[in-house]
Image (tube, rainbow, N blue to C red; front, side, top):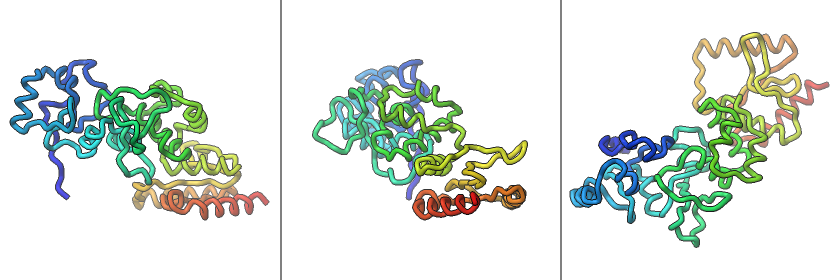
Length: 289
């Protein structure tokens, strides 16, 4: 697969005047006419660039560089903005698997007859830049994702951005009873999406789950149910020899204290949860006796 060259630095949002473009936006090489006008380009400049092939016109009022991100171009052609899982991925945030299709939020000019748009819980918002902000994308995600996936995505955003639930709520341009209910289940202490999913699913199964339980003065496990400690590996988790040895020493010390450790892989949580939950239930029951 060929690597797409970087977009033209002459048209980067970083060069726009303060307030001309949302600071949360990412540069995918697709811009609205107001964005480029704010950059100092006149309509005559835009027509000249189009004639020269320096800019393409995916739809009226929107311009794309020839090397623009294909997802962004597709969103413009659909009279919308990249949002939900697609936008969160562009913002370099973790998104659970299963949402790889293109997610586009409908703009006011989009056809109301199309069913393949992400929609907000309230009134439609205008599309002013091709990629929705993190907050707006999270609101859309609540309507597209399963509840536990949404909570894990919210947790991951908080962990990555270094914020708490109150800060996250301020980022959301709209809310709903569903979103408020999901926020009550969020926890920014979760270190990975798999940890969040395990916590939420176990609590919904009736377990009392402690987050980041203390093992020693300097060490914490991911989760604890009764005496069982649970460690959740992310997909990108790679053990160095030193980490491997340290983990086994820690597991052994915990076991001498009557607290066994269950280590869950990414696949255990994402693709084999039914069996994983059965195992957790059996182990917790055995050590409760």
